[in-house]
Image (cartoon, rainbow, N blue to C red; front, side, top):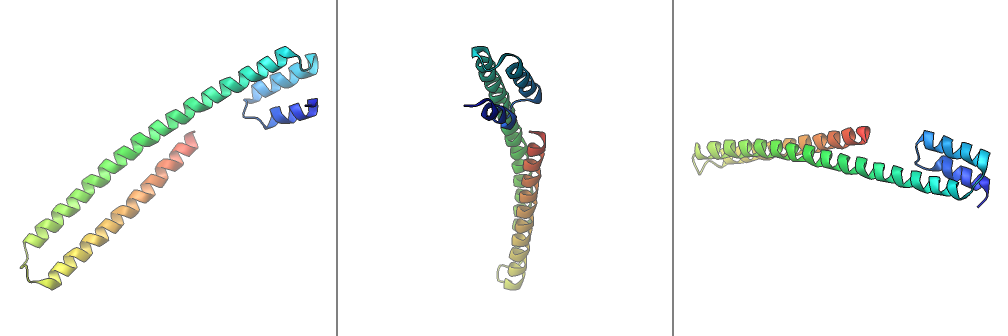
Length: 132
């Protein structure tokens, strides 16, 4: 691998700017000796470990936020179900018009709740991506 290829590899790597700069300076001053490759390998391992920790932290945060959202949505769904049970018990069982109206309202509320859930989940993912 030529020095130019190695420089391109360093520049396109996920290493921090400071580590890239140090490797480039080292390469200019001392060339690509064993110490250079040891440093390069060490920096790659450190950055990969840090990225792994950040990723794990982001996943953990997303899971917690998702759990909270699911609890909130479940609570709202239970309230909707209690409401429909109450409404259905208050009408004549043979009153089909009212039953249809109640069920239509129920499914509309569930659809709305599903839309809210999807939007909030998108917000969670966006938040995680912005902080990761």
